[in-house]
Length: 73
Image 1: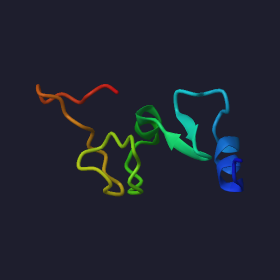
Image 2: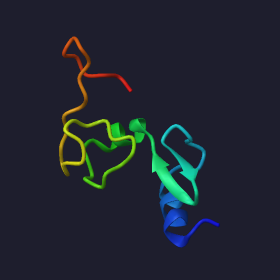
Image 3: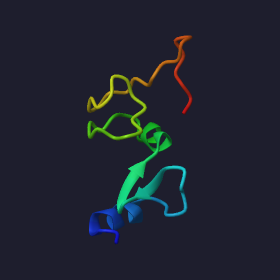
């Protein structure tokens, strides 16, 4: 059963854009692509946070690969 908050989030997102989120146990899980489109960290401890250091609200630094380039997620 999907709760009202999840339904509200899904209404705001394009329901057909499965590259941005998926549902797990009645919760919306955002993908790295969603977070990158958002533009900065929300600070909520998201599973797929692409920012480094993680979970710092407003952080815009993405993870770096071994060559020092931003990782394409």
